[in-house]
Image (cartoon, rainbow, N blue to C red; front, side, top):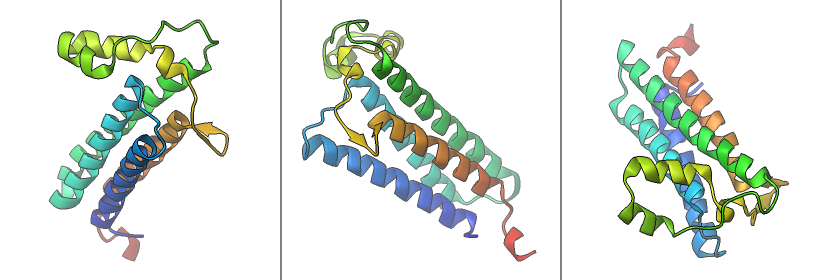
Length: 166
């Protein structure tokens, strides 16, 4: 098994690759992100930053538990937003509110708490499924990757250095 530092760098690399693909899909295939997609990107970026911090800091003993908690929280928050997005996509057409102002406009004129509440309720643009891979929409893949990365990050950082040699 690779050591914790290598595992954390690998987690960071996977998060960077996921964000790179999201940007590729946006700019090359024209798949503009809805507000829930943007929040998922923020979650994946935060998860990647937690992996990077854990890899660079590489704490010994009890210090690693802070990174376990940070990775777990970032992964669970990302998974929760992705699950909410999947729920919004599963609703019948016409049951969601119509598309509102773009996220950039909302950020300019709404307080942060109200903005988060509005985005998480979803809108018509968040209910569209315009990309699938192996039958799953993009939020399903984000959910899967967030849970896998979170579990791997927790397991890697709970493991003591040198355990594989015993």
